[in-house]
Image (cartoon, rainbow, N blue to C red; front, side):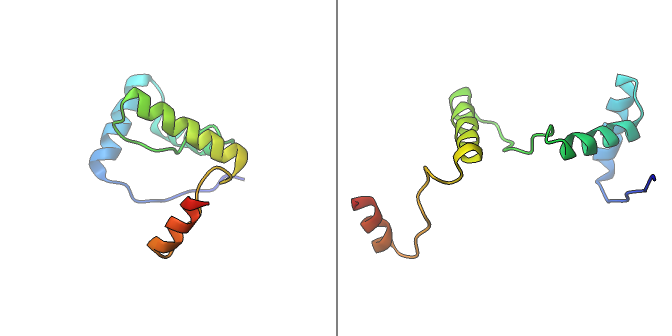
Length: 91
């Protein structure tokens, strides 16, 4: 069964995406279908986006990989007060 998905997107962004798909020789709908399929198969990376230098990018990727592998084992808990944080750091 095929279903239709409708969502809103900025028209300028849509136009740029359609032009890029056309330049690549594929229909824009195929791009969207591939993105959905990649998302479902965990092949679409929805990580941090930003202009980070190489060292920072590596550290972020390493931290994300560690969290995925070990959960939040190597991170500090959240604190309600500065005193709580200091007590935790002192231990």
